[in-house]
Length: 299
Image (tube, rainbow, N blue to C red; front, top):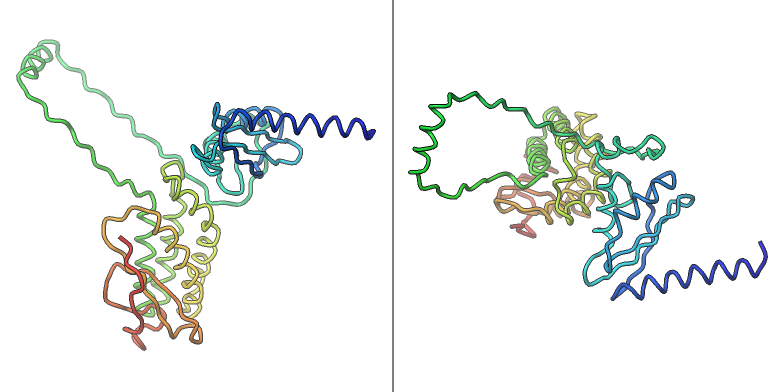
């Protein structure tokens, strides 16, 4: 390629970027890796990420790199990448739901990194019973006489609750220095993590989940694979740090106590989370049950 051709291409790219920035106020530009295969992927990725006057995505199918240009006062990189993930395309920050990835055309199904699979929740079918016409008319007449109160629907909005509950059960097993019980609770925690449906996570939860997910799985697997409480505790330190990051961005019904043991790991110390205010040390158990203090209350 001649020097003149290279200059023309570079000029065209620069003018294109300047044109995009001119249309988007408070423009910020970042690069992100997004996995895909072909031109069809390019159209889907860019369509999912683009927002008129707010965000513009330019994806290269050869390098798998995307240039994200967006109005930093109205959106951010995570919001754009999450939309792209929900369209079926993984990035280093967000992983697409399994059912959406599976629905992509065969030519668009790129090779995916090892990850926790997100199960698809099936909604049970409910058959509507047949109603006699006369009974229906009578019911409707009676219904007109009733003053309806607004229905209040409550549900558990915390998709990560089961993960936290199994973590606390694992912590209690280590307080008892029961390696067999700790292994069993770690197995339950892996099941809970595998059931997390990322579609139901808030943006901040999703961001932290993607950051800590691999380490959570790794440390929980190590705890599950042994019944040696001392070895389990070595992995429980990092597991606790990552669960702490998740819990900080999740809604909780009751306070959680972030506690610290100054003695563990040759005096370097270690932390853990507890639903109890009283200190019960999972790193030493009965040897130094009350060693430690609460350093933060998470509400």
